[in-house]
Length: 539
Image (cartoon, rainbow, N blue to C red; front, side):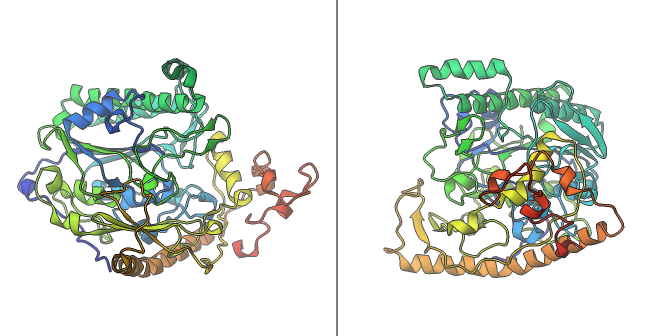
């Protein structure tokens, strides 16, 4: 069983340093391992992030807590395995993206340490109840969107509780502008900024001048989809250059720790508007949603000029849950009241070039399927060079789009709103799952050669460790889920819920309806389940 780690692990080098560094934590959205030039992409231009890598550390084996957005963000934000927090999937309408209110976030920790805190950009860890929004989860400022997606030109954002309609700026520019304004407002008080960019997540859109540049660069082999994606990435990179320049102008460059990463791997399947998104992602198999390397191994660059030695490339496996204990450890403060044990480790010794045997010796577990977690479905555990992987049966990985997509699609185009959850959730499937596969990542990072038959003893050892981890975290997920459902029931007890027939009038997923359904005459609330006025479990 994986033991929980101490709440605060302070780097001894800074134990006597009373100066609290600023923190800028930048997270891209669906940016793959191969989507930056410094990770081997010879087409995309990312000079800002390439230079940041030269200034500090570039990790080759950095893992997201999950291959999907909301659960990944839960791990990054809390330093805890996402299952413990309640966030195991992306449907906000079911509350499966929510962090149990008992969990402490990056914002809670740094506010407790006396920092000004802000979350700018994408949240996706609780949308339809104000209790779950960032400015009630430790962040002084929330400028962004709670939904899983947002339009890049006709965006609708929140500034805490106030609606912020689009003003003609490209979304990435608006987020970077807000980050710059936040930095400039700080005086003597240290700050912790969580800058959650949406790029290059769909709906795919970018400034035309950049799209044209990549069309011309590809030439006759041009992929309009990839041209747009690379334009989105370059636009974000250019804006981050302005953020970094602001730190320098304000005299904060050497007083600020910067972490750049992504929530999960790239989505390489067909975009509904533009077509295939297949592009360079190193040698790795899989994509977003998969616990193959392509879904969970993501870029990570860390810089602290003058403190962290420059130009390092580190292949020690590092986990997304490591960043909160690492960064908070630099404050030399105790944990906030009610804080729970971290699952991550303090990796500052590694960043400083010191031996880190605890990092190389540990096992890193992963698991993600749709809805209630299934032990051996899309699950994996890595220890050293070995990785045991359970692919999962397809039914356990399928999304009920008719039930879960209307709210997501409405959230891309419409201002934020509140509504009750679809609280019903089927129990985890007991259907047989395919057997695990064993990969030697040192010799086979592409995960092409299954060695399970040759090394049954390694399969058994890793399976036991994964199963012990799952047995530990699943009761905590069930408890968090119960808290989330009960909170929602209490929240809506004396409130008037909106009419779902009117709310989703233009967003029903008729393609997911039973064959023969006539969209012009059918009552969507009789066709699609999960909406609060036709489900007795929601009363």
